[in-house]
Image (cartoon, rainbow, N blue to C red; front, side, top):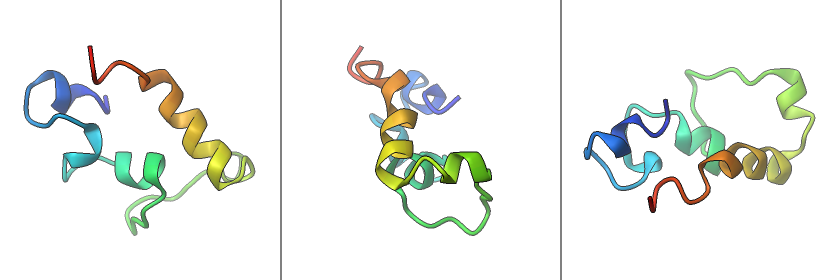
Length: 62
């Protein structure tokens, strides 16, 4: 879902889509509309951002 705006040609990176949660989840920017699950928060900031971005690695370039 995060890559839909990329595949549609709207943006080059999911973080550039203003309606995406990517900036909050992948980059750690605050978003008052999101509530993170406790297990997700338990991973620690660096680990959870890396884990979230891993499946998208290379997908944006493809």
